[in-house]
Length: 175
Image (tube, rainbow, N blue to C red; front, top):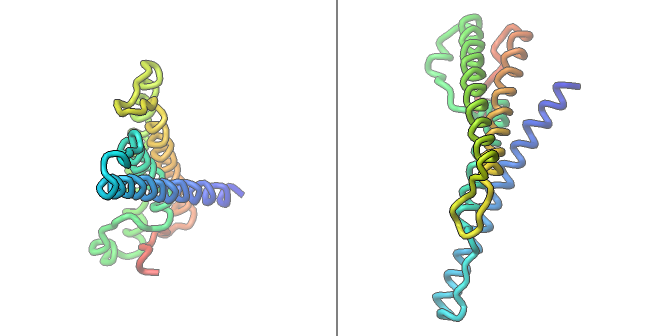
């Protein structure tokens, strides 16, 4: 039951990342189309999507951080297979456990300080500097959520590997 919940959580984060990439494509394509219209029609047909670059940047941050946990669970992160392939199952498993633990520590550290930054932005009312002022804690919240999910995915994968008594991460390209 918990396994299904966590897998759905990681998948949902992956879908949020995909939707963010789609949003970037749509908003940038719309602005490019408006620029072409202005070139063809002249100044009277010159329109701009306010703060489109800021929104695309926020969506890029959301996509980047929300994709991390899903990518980890799918085996899509870059690994040093040259070393891993030369090790036996025992040493490979020990190395996987060590790297998962270190990854969880770094992700937890980043989550804590990202959360602190988000809280400061909320507390002080920090806003983006674009035409459309956006409270910075909103895009920072997506970053913190993605980092927290990554930390959870590291811990989850660590315990799953511990219970299996063997390495469980594989490369997405080798299956």
